Image 1 (cartoon, rainbow, N blue to C red):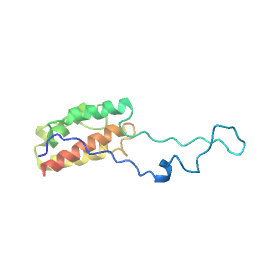
Image 2 (cartoon, rainbow, N blue to C red):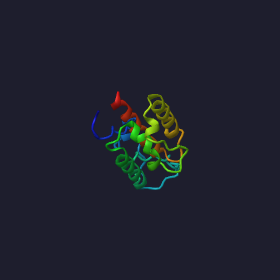
Image 3 (cartoon, one colour):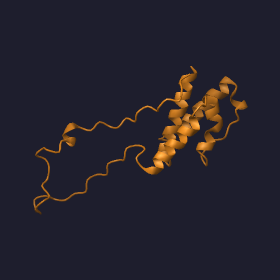
Image 4 (tube, one colour):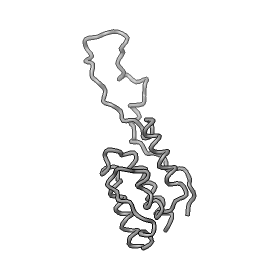
Length: 139
């Protein structure tokens, strides 16, 4: 299998080049007050993943949890990194059967998928990424 390499880079949405150009004619001169410009609030820009301290702490906790574990060990211990969730703890011995492993893996992906886990999407994404990478390394 693969070692505990770095996680894949976070993919951010494409930003059109004209939004990054700070020298263009579309900038509003705010040095002088004017009635011709109506002040509007800019839409909030979502923070990049991992920017907030609590997000970084979540990512770090999941990295520590996943280190050195195979898929069975991750599924048997995911309740430790994601307590108080809909996930039912599994025993390692209960995951020895291939059908049980496959079933638990699918259930975990559905339980922790960020879209289905809106209260903690960063945790959900990290757990799903860890499970997928562990599953791929077992093939």
